[in-house]
Amino acid sequence: MGATLIVSMLCVHLLCFSAMFLLISTRLHGKKMGMEVFAIGNFLLGSAYVLQLVGGPPGWNAMSVVNHTLTLCAPAVYAVGAMRFFGRAAPLWRPLLTLALAYAAAQIVVQGTLGTEVRYAMLAGASAMLFLAMTATVIQGAHTFARDLRAEMMLFAVLIGGIFALNAMKFVMILKDGLEALDMNSRFQTVFYLYMSFLATVLAPSIIWLVLRRLTDELRAMAAHDPLTRLLNRRGMLDGLDAYFRSRTAGPAHLLIVDIDHFKRINDTYGHQIGDTVLCHVADVLRDTARQGDLACRLGGEEFVVICPDTDAEGALRLASRARMAIENSEVVTAAAPGGPIRCTVTIGISAGFAGPQELDRAMQQTDAALYRGKHTGRNRIERSDDATKIDSATESAPLGARPAH
Image (tube, rainbow, N blue to C red; front, side, top):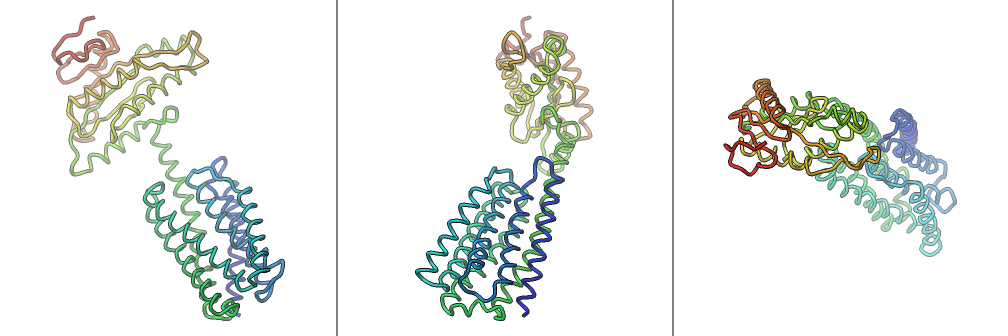
């Protein structure tokens, strides 16, 4: 009676959270993060337990075949939901239908050849292997694609590992004791369904928590990034700079301001849509040429900033040279622009080193002054604020003190 009551409550719990997951998925326009799939998984498992309650003692009938099929399909659906949560395209209905038909056919074959006990043992064994594979995948994910959720993933691994252990024990007990191991009044079945009830109670809110955390992270990322170029905006730049200088090993940083030459002419000639394409192109080049740990930002308009932490003046100069040359030597290909690909150049100002966020305004003023000089002495060049050394696009390999020819 105790296990029957637990299973009844488990059915209600699973079906209620199925409805809740479905409602949440309707509010997540576009990116549903697998919530509609988790709703289907809960519905399948809840339906399987309903069939178990109304189907009577273990035996051979159509209701039992459907029950076993739904019980095995439910965790497979959860796996698809997890893949979609992490942004991996995973089909659902065709693989699910294939699994359901294949397992129903396998049950008929096993029942006709080996009997009812082996059919029930097959379900426990297949479930155990499926949950073992899920546990291993979750552990691997904690160290690869879900490092930002490592603590949560390890908790899931422990919980899913518990289902694996219980199904493995059930498999052994059925082979040893036969259908008596499935008696709803046995201690093992009570423990089994208590654990399943606990798991359903914990996992459903945990999934909702993960969705809320992912939404919060995305909102935070949107607040810190420029919507057009996906580079950091001023807020993201300041947050990243603060995080860097909080480290005890933080060294000086240098600031680069990158300004697209004659950008107004590009907008006037080709239109603002093409101008936006040019901005995105320059942003992509800066993202590709920056080092890991550099902060690439768009301040607004055609002006970009790259903060180079833990480097010296020569390192900042090398980065600026790579970026300037990469932009000059690349093309912006767009079918909307008449006359073929568009080329653009940039002028870059470099600040002296600064040792904390409180010195950022001074570094910005230095770099603005250097950029202003570069704009008024020919453009497509790099201007350093510390010694006003000018490095022309044609003579970047010249000694630092050389004056470029115009």
